[in-house]
Length: 478
Image (cartoon, rainbow, N blue to C red; front, side, top):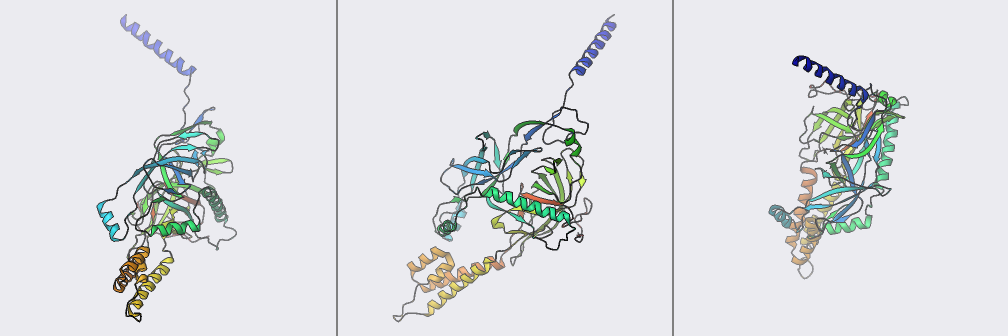
């Protein structure tokens, strides 16, 4: 009797559960980091969420004289922010922040600064941002951490124009058109930055030569602020057309905007290192969504040369070989690096095949020649005594050694030997730093913006995974 009651209770519970599940089916909610299944249910929606760890690229829109912790900062977004396929925060949106920390100066750094006539060495400034202000006045608070590699004045570097393309090379033509549009958007965003004029730059240069001077954060200084909490912008319906188009073949000649996930440095990165980037903007073919924001690109380092002595600069060449939609099936691609975000002081250039190399400014010849001329002037002054037998002060040598500080010291000391020593020191330091010292490496920190072209231009052949360390070759242009 007890067993019969137990069996009856079991069947009654099972039937009740089954009926309830049939009356109220559960529909999954898709996040921005997942690709919908092709067997989607009508009425399904996609949550428009900017995921945690998404970097916001924020540039200061005016110069700031560093005074205290908590000092307010104001910037603007340089790159737009997308959630899945929607633009949720446009480029140019205002961002509020503050100076979070002003680090102290170590005894070693202060001592070296004094020996170099620099009594106020630059301090490391930590900043934070916490609020977006949209054009309609809406304020969106957020929590973010500024990542290493931030705090430089950036520029968008493109590959050299290749005039050998034929009229049949439609992929290259489309890539060039897409690059021109990207340049236009970049310049439109940077127009909102109050860059200093020539007179102001000359004033700042003169101040930078003084032994004691204030510290500034330049207009256009770019920071990568990674979100620590996601931002929610509602949801949108998932249409059958969207499901059918996601993950389809990439159109030839399209330009992908992606953020580097794998930091690269020609001094430490090895040939064959796997490289990954994440799409910062969705990819469309007309009105068809091909890749949503958050899709991944995978590739490898084809060639790397670290910087060496005698001012040989570093080189770095990478190529992407497959694209992976979120939780989707990867597809092979033929891609080339067409543009990259780099610091203005890094002097990075891209060749026509997308290889990156640090370049040396031609001004090194002028500055070295000036230092040598000043040193020679100091030596001539030593031999040109006036009629009273008094030597002229070695102002030229002082300028070669410590610039404005050296001139002041030379006028105060009025010793020709001192001027000659200063001139020799300045000339030798200029020759060493510009022609003998180690060159500059190519450095792409995490979250570096890259423009990747899909098509025949600069086709780079990669061996299967695990074989990248061997010799590489490239297919000829079509």
